[in-house]
Length: 423
Image (tube, rainbow, N blue to C red; front, side, top):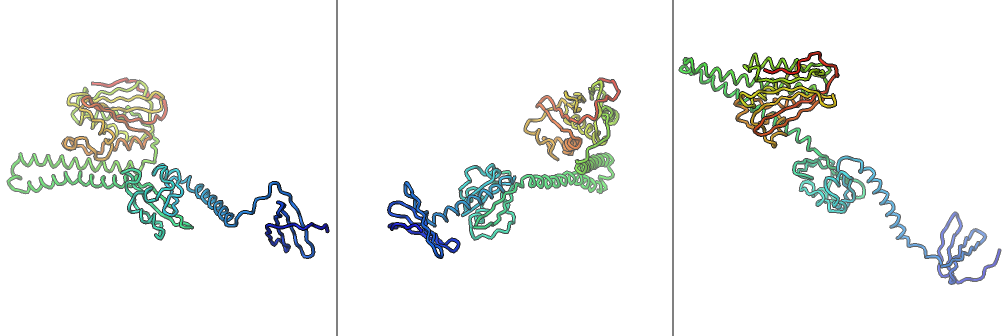
C-alpha cells in the first residue's frame, strides 16, 4: 500500500455505507480526501479542488428544500384536478385562498388568490365555516344569495382535506331558482285567472236566487250573458293550460307530418269571416306562387295561426285590416309566417316579456277583451317544438308584427298558384 504523508485535517465527516466507513476530510491546503475504511484496509483518495469545495449544506436546509419540492408538486396536482371543473373551486389553507380554478376567478375576480377567504366570498352564512380551522364540514350545501351578482343563487359546499386544507365548491343554482319561481308564479297566476270568472259566476247565481231579480227578464238575461262569457273565458283558459301541458310533454318529439301552411291560413281566414263576423277586407293574405311544405303537427300549427290572428284583432285598430304573409327565407331553409296589425303598438321594454305566461302590457284591457295571457307563450313553445323560432317587432302608434319561422320539409311546391287573397 502506498504511504501517505501526514495531512492536517480541518473537517471530517463520515458515513457508514455497506458495512464500510466512508469519510470525507478537508485539509488545510484545500484538498478534499475521501477515505474508505474496510475490515482490513484503508484506501485514501485525494481530490484536488480549485477553488476549494463548498461545505456540505445544512441538513435542516435540505429538509426545507425537500418539503418545498413536495408542496409544489402537490399544488400542481391539485391545480390539474380543479382547473377543468366548470363549477368555481377554491383551495383554502389557513383561511386564505391558496388556489382557484378559472371558473372561480371568473366569478369572484383575480384578486382572490392569496386573499382572506372571507373577503373572497363575502357572505355571512359562509364566513365562519370558511375561516374557522376547527369547523366540521359535512359537505351539506349552504345557500348563498348575491355572490357574483344580485340575481344569482349559489350552493356552497366545503370539504376538509389533509393538512388543514379545505376545498370550497360553488354550484350555480340560479336557473333552478328561476324555474322554480316561474312554476310558483304560474300556479299563482293560473289560480287567480280561474278564480276571477268563477267568483263572478257564483255572485250572479246568488243574485238570481233573489225572487225579484229572477222574475225580471231583462236582468236575468243580462246576468246570464255575463255568466256565459265568464264561463267561456274560464274554458279558454283551461284549454290553453292543457295545450301548454301537451306541448311541454312533446317538446322533444319533432313532428314528421308534411303540412301545407296555405290550407291552415285559408281555414283560419274562413273561420273569422264565417264565425266571428269579420269581413273579407279585414283579412289580407299574401302567399308565394310556390309554397314549400313544412314538417309539423297540424293541430298545433293551426293553433299558432289562430292565436296570432286573435291577438291581431284584439289589439289592432278597429276597421284596419290584419295582414298574413307567408314566404320562404333567402336560403330556402325556413318558411316565414307573419301576422301584422295596425294597432297602438308595444313599447320596446315590454317586447322581451310578451311570451311570458300571463304577462300583459295592459292588464285591464286584456281582461276586458277576454285574453288569457297565454296566447303568445303557446305560439313560442309550438315554434320551438317544431325547430323554429318566434320574433316580435312593434312600433308605438303604428302596429305590431309577430313572425314564426318553421323549417321547410322539401322544396316541392304545393301545386297551387294563387299569389294573394284579399277582400
